[in-house]
Length: 308
Image 1 (cartoon, rainbow, N blue to C red):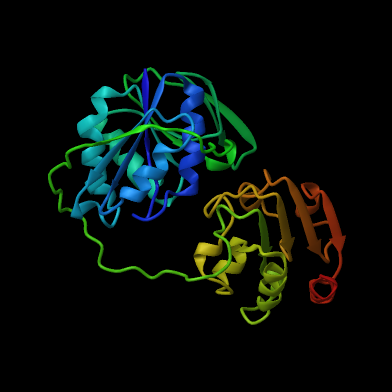
Image 2: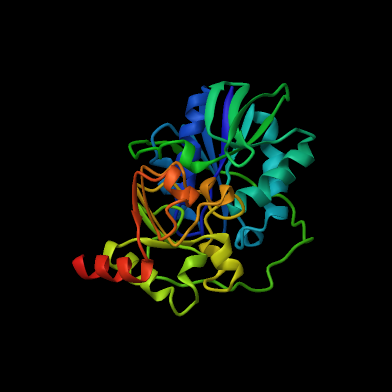
């Protein structure tokens, strides 16, 4: 029994979510191999080889893997899938694009967003926005799985796996990258930050969102938002935390002006410590908060920033 983990990366650095996926793979049992498909991604392959629990790294280097196009990488994964009992990817944006393609090509039923491993064929995953946990058993020959990063600790360094080159699959050509619009920020990545400060509809406007950013900068935190704030145009949609946004579990999550709709709670309720600031004492966010402050955010947040 051998598990293949598909690495998230940008051709320069190994994605943090890959470390959580490797931990899930080690809990399944057997050897763990990591596939790094990219262009000029030798440093990523070397980094993957140093992760504890990894027995082997497969490095596929080709120009058509440079942009991480899922249609291209899926063909590569399927070409080597016969050697593996399990194929795991993170439940990241790229993983959610790639893994269903792999499952379809293998005629397998994907198990999505697992948060724990019961055995090599049985897994737990949240449903109904995290209000229930489903136990799913798979009888597929090759099990295709996405892993929720917040459900597993990140694997540590300390490995010394061998790195082997694998032949690239033929160019698929059905999809190409035309361009990218990226949000450039010096703040920590939202999905991997230790501290997250999120603002909601109560912030009132894009201009007012600056007070959320000021608090985040004081704490060295990432900035998040509820769907209501994103839909209102206060911030870009890559700030969104929730069922249809990013799922985060930082050490500290500060929710400012967020009522706490079930869809938002699904994306942050596993945070270690939750702080809520809202003037509505009946807001659902207080039901999951470790610390709650009933106050006007336009008074409380500047005072907090000044104190910090």
